[in-house]
Length: 80
Image (cartoon, rainbow, N blue to C red; front, side, top):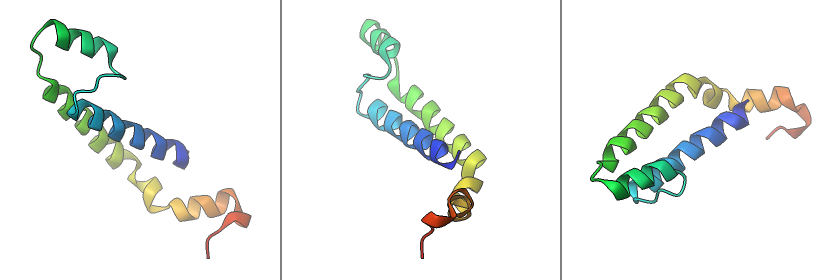
């Protein structure tokens, strides 16, 4: 679960970077709408950034206790 949360967080960060750079590879419908009219892409960037903040608040406990989670998952793979 901890690894899934970290990967989702990285995916959201990737989405924000792509939206800031006007790269809509992962957003085909948004790309069509932007090409058809003058949409404010920064509106979507702020919404995805807000999603990242809410996600981080919700799953921050996993980050705080990630060392303990790894130890209880696989005690032979602990860091010294």
